[in-house]
Image (tube, rainbow, N blue to C red; front, side, top):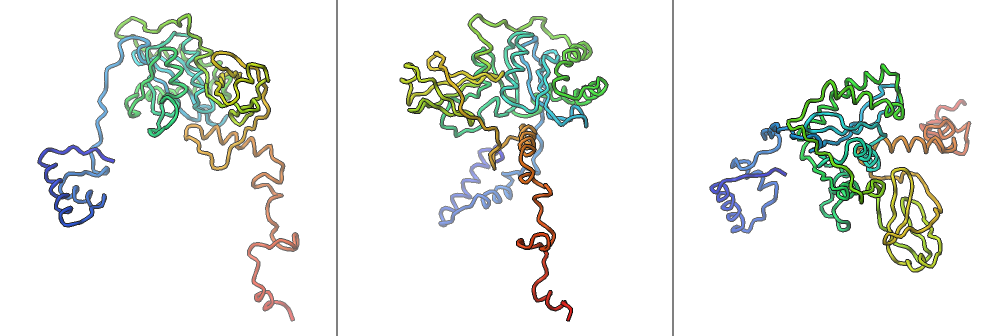
Length: 372
């Protein structure tokens, strides 16, 4: 909906129009009121509105003061491999590539891994600058539960790193222009190097980053480096992990990520029935179950990696989900696969008399053309 700015005179005219309608016992519809406002010049529809200017802003003065982060899905390996996503960390003051990583799609765990690599290489920046992806902020304004923080923003808060979300792509133009350059130069460099896999590309990227920063990086206005070292009490393993609470049943079980976790029936675990415990999922695949800092021994009962019918999938993760769907369909028996010859209906009833054939002529038509 458009934002309307009216003067006192225009606001008075609008109130008079509404009062006249109320005095006559009329109910004003939203569209009717909008048409009145357009006729009076109080409303300009989106098609005729002037575009908002995106004026440039000054760079940050120091290295590590603001790092822009984002991902770009592209055919980085051209036709040698499927599309994938490149995560990039670009310093705002110098336009240096602080970190690059190829992943299947944008996810919180991939940002956990990339953030850890960036911190270990350079230190903690003052703040990150990102878009409004659900990894970085809670987009549901009517959310009932939770503390209003995503898993990634919670991890950054524990590390004393701020996260700022841009209101438009133009606001983070530094990294958008960097992706424009990388989609041209990096694609050609990967082709010349003969690289066609994510693993090989990630091993090759450090040399490309060093060469790119030497050629295209610029000195900061202030030579001070604002990256900070980790404090003794800060643990990257514990901060950069996915944490959720689950209720323990009377049978000492809990469900997490389509998996049943069975707690060992120790005297301490028996007292946790109908209480909430914390499940910690680390980016390297490890799990931990804790209650008030105490780690509980457990075993997993089952885990099913399937895509539910009608599942809601974000656009930036659609590629990875489709890859998983293809893997699942390839694992099916031949008679369950889509477009498999065994699933196709026969062309006529001679091959399968018990099945009706498509485009079968009516019975009376068949009788009319039958030979005498």
